[in-house]
Image (cartoon, helix red, strand yellow):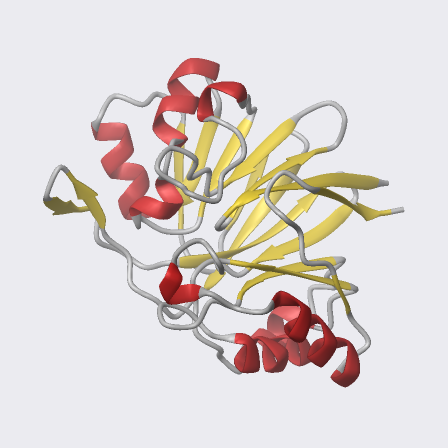
Length: 232
């Protein structure tokens, strides 16, 4: 079994098992790295790691248009429900929520989390990582996070792929990304949250070389719009 994973730029991804579609952190509008528009995307489920605008992105608009279910951390879920979205489910660290075709388990992430709604800061809460079981594979989306040693426990989930930020400045950088890859022991590592803005410019090729030299993982740096098949 397998899942087609498409990088939409920054930390935005699309997953499909051939029958359903899942979006993760769908930030397209205002994303200089995006190669597609929010209007071109459809979804059955939308997963959001935390409340920052570059992760919530176009999720509300896509959900309204398609009827997709949004699954996210509890405070953000409550905020989105209060704005009139109908199918929103909130969870928290350690909890697992099922969706059509799979499930998502919330893990910790070391970061901040607040949504800027026209200058008003709302929906404060905890950020999260996501262990997504879908299409017969297991993919960890670290979200925005620093390195933390409990990634070793997440590695025990049996990861087919791990999507980790390497941009530095706002998240862990490449050196800590290599350490994260050692903890996670994923078959494939996919870097994200880099080269969107000058502050997070990084050399994905150098990151790939370091991880593959120091671990048994294969690194697949994707350009926005490119896809990779996770699984067999």
